[in-house]
Image (cartoon, rainbow, N blue to C red):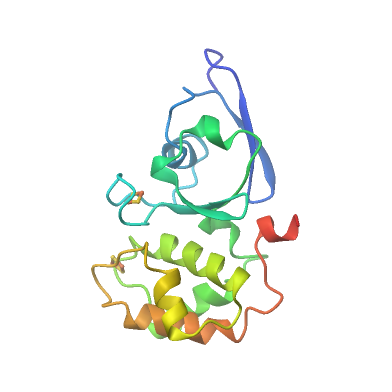
Length: 168
Ligand code: FES
Ligand code: FES
């Protein structure tokens, strides 16, 4: 941490973290560059593709649009927080088994959007999955395998909640 900036503190995947960076630095860059959490990806950098999706205080946000100052005191959940004790989250397992990930650029954002959807609606219909993932773009899969992955995971995610949900 540089001493030039006041500390900004928040919780990432259940761990207290502090960074000294410019207040307007993007949360996406803080996660990737300062905290070395490179699972979160940059696609468009303009809030259009959802590749950079993380959960902040239980809401899905595009981290490319969030100045880190806005995350002060927040609870943030990234794709790195999905697995536990070395075991993949049911969504990660389903994406693996159903071919929901190809090049992988959209995958962390898709996983976070799907996590957010299933946290609110454990058994979504196909229409609800389409709507829940509408902010996330994929150039490889044609989306069907992603939707199938979420459907496959929906039966096994009961009781599997992310750090932000455990805080409630
Ligand atoms: S990189 Fe953030 S929405 Fe595309
Ligand atoms: S798997 Fe390549 S963009 Fe979705």
